[in-house]
Length: 140
Image 1 (tube, one colour):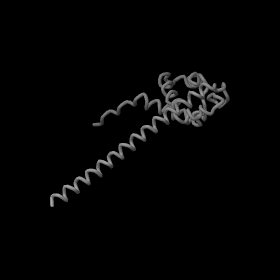
Image 2 (cartoon, one colour):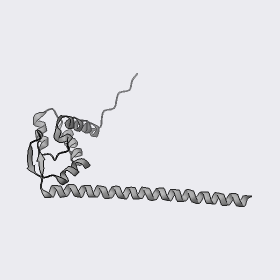
Image 3 (cartoon, one colour):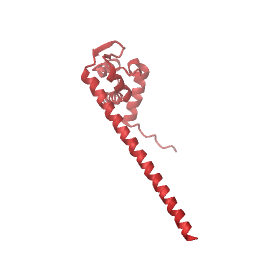
Image 4 (cartoon, helix red, strand yellow):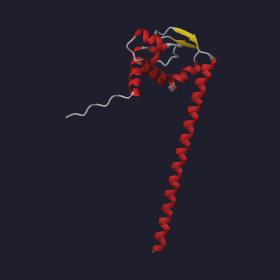
């Protein structure tokens, strides 16, 4: 008897959709800044796409570090076929840079906290070893 396989979560389904979009469209694979309304372009080409799932996938994509790095430097957006779209406003580039800076800062803080924790654990082990040595010395 086999147990039924659990249904994939919406995030897992969105990741699968995103992988298929990256395989199918070079603008996704190359992390080019996407045209505003790219969801409508996708739905026009493949009306069978689930809108909610597509929006989730696009949100994941647009918040990825690679996409944000691309947006930070971009001057042009691109359509599904790779043709140039509208210009990327300075406000959008600045927003991407701000998000990346915040992520970098949080990651740096996390690493620093981990380093301090490792040092504290090492100090505690060293202190315990010294105490054990003293106890053994006086127990003789």
